[in-house]
Image (cartoon, rainbow over all chains, first blue to last red; front, side):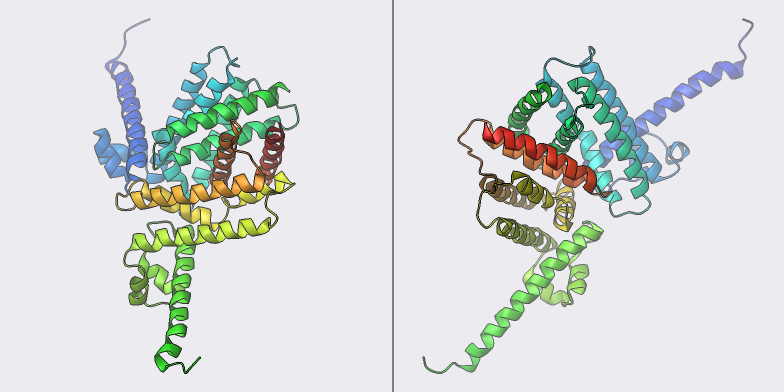
Length: 203
Length: 203
């Protein structure tokens, strides 16, 4: 198909480099937020952590709000994909495994980062609308995955609210894990609530 | 019973004044934390809000950590007392009313304030042990009240974890209410899970 010009040959690696830089910035932003909170998370700190110049960081993300909302969204998408990949067959027989995997979404660094962003947004007007919109989007997607993997029929009365309550519980368990390692208690609660859920969805 | 000395006469009102000042500081600290978050909450800001001198504030609470942990504890105790007072007869027939009242603990300014303190403690070493200890204490008391008011028998297998999961759900519902008014959805979730809980505890 004819010769490839020097400009064309250079373009692809440049796009790759740009994508890799963007990804490093997003991952550094989530770790930074999880470890240092909103007050300790600036574009400069993240750029340094990612090994990227401040100018390059600002080329990708003009504002601090752009960087951190994009970072939480990126990692949330990664986690959703990973969650679906755990159950490639779709609705799982073992509902306890699904409940445990859903709860796991709320106990890692992503939840910690999202929580910092969330709490900061409650007091900062320029952050609030963007985080509200982001949380709604991520929440809808998580709900959709939960319904699929649990094999829940939302046309039945109460089923939608049962699944919502389960995700609220997962979020509350994430909060309980913030200051102490709550794993042992969490596993007992997950076992019990998975059993309640299983019985309810079978009825 | 004999005469009262001038010193004795003066002591009581002084104690009253001191108690009233302390209470004003605690209430101002919770409102401040709920509205401005940890970064915006200093002893000076709270003293001004309470109409108390900075010196008087520091007499009551030598450090910022003292003031804000005492404030969250004080308001949590007030709320526990108010919750028990809603059901003076103890275990209530209407479990949905109990679940709704428990969930209400996590949707007001106290929860907002506690959440700010909690998230700040996850990144600040001098705050962390105190908040961890405080949350454990408040959590145990809330669990005790929930068991009493639900008439739950914790000697039955799974009942303890059912109640814990309910309180985790309540905390998650509180978080969902942070950026948007989530009341309508929350009421549907509460209705559904109260019905599931009722069935489970009756079995």
